[in-house]
Image 1: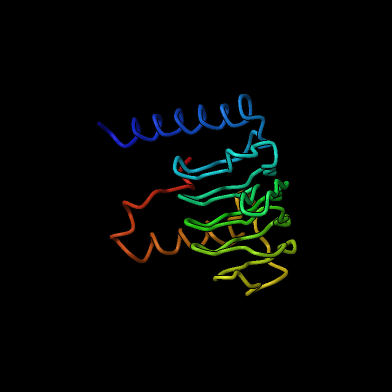
Image 2: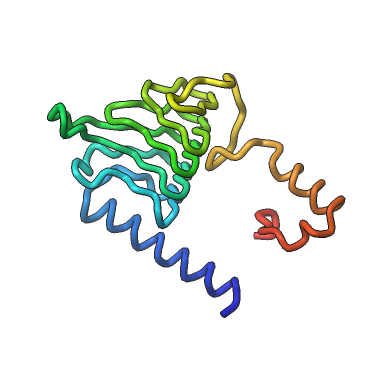
Length: 164
């Protein structure tokens, strides 16, 4: 099976999954959000999940809205143009500001100010006043990819976002 067919199948599955989250579970997830098949928004209090437009939630990232030990059910907000890195955990009741990048494996225990990069356990701001576009992608990312493709022959087979 070709990669193009697998890509189509993945898009179909992720689309159906997001429709389920929005329609059946009543999560507040903007239609432009992209989410890995293994991302895990909280199903215990699904109405507490809020994800803004053009945000990407990577593999095994978890967005929590409850804490059973304390009997808490809270709204968790992720802003626009964010990237939530793989294996990260966002605790219940937090707000991730617009245009943020959450590093892979981070445990977010406090609100994240807009235009910030946070990473670590617990996550800490490692850079502020960043500029990102849709899905938390850095503005110069396309140019960086182009340069890599021109200088490294083995990079020709990498996924090419610019060819879309």
